[in-house]
View 1 (cartoon, helix red, strand yellow):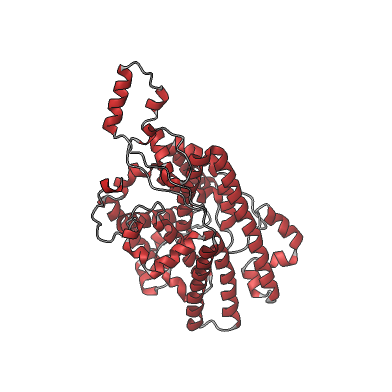
View 2 (cartoon, rainbow, N blue to C red):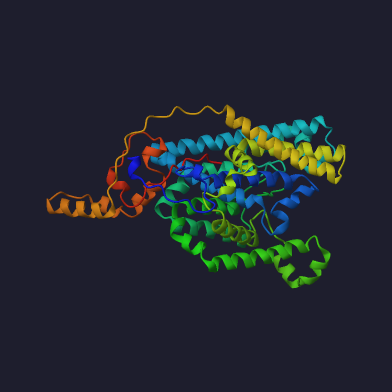
Length: 457
């Protein structure tokens, strides 16, 4: 079989080691870099934050993290649907939601213990743990129902809710993807029109309003299912020019916050129109800024980008592959860094040391987690079967009709949509799902998809 497969000539920047692998390492790299940026941004008055997105535009790493989470959820739960059906999807979403819920509660207790051991003070107020230390019973009860959250751990309750609801979301996306995305956009618009939110305690404020931020998760999942149809537009020169212009505009506005001479050049009417830039409800300017960054990534970061082999990217990939524990570690490192700045020194040297040290600790922890993971026993691969081409399939269908063989109407009706959906989540011989329950005819309308198994974030 292998001697009949021609090896295509590699393009400039492609990575031979990734050829044929199903896991898109760009997803892990994006998650890892987002985790680093979140850590650097959360350390107060940190010079390391000048390496992140926050100071160069309207959005920050949170938008990247949410979108990529939607992508990974579509891949992971889509594979579960193909292998185990909807029972498997529901079981996995509930399990993942429970894992995040437990991580959230343990992280909250760990941060409270850390603040208590250091004497509370200013850190207790800035981290929103004062109320937990003063009223532990009522606060823990509110935390158990996700109404109370520590600063920097706000995103975890959002993921608990989104994973709980992802099974019905996936069901809708597989059947009416564009309608589902439209409903998500409508909910986002209603949040901004009427101020909708979900209950929170003690001040009723969510740092990440789930009703607004759900849009990025839905958008990421929709892109994995329906995005191929719109990719030519995203990678068009018109989209690139519009994205670059908006990013330049965002850069000028963002730098004017820190550079006084530049601030004088920005019209006050424009600043009044932009402010306040509401992160809690995912301000439209932030959403557009992220979309512009996504267009640039689609243009300049191919799947087999050679930069993924560099040491920095390998570290980011490892962190992205262990996103939940590394996120929790990053929150604890933020607390420790804040304590060091308050108790030892707030100088630039200390800020740089804490920033570099924190990122290195995250990489080391992710590397250790990868080393201790137990690899599943590989199942023997079935002998590959050559799939019929479109032309052969059409001939076979015509022959079957001529011979009087009944062709199920559902098969003919689902040739375009159903087969595309099934192929999205990988042929069985590469996905480890066991024997293929779908006839060969189900894979005849295009090249086999790669293994799309990704860990849901």
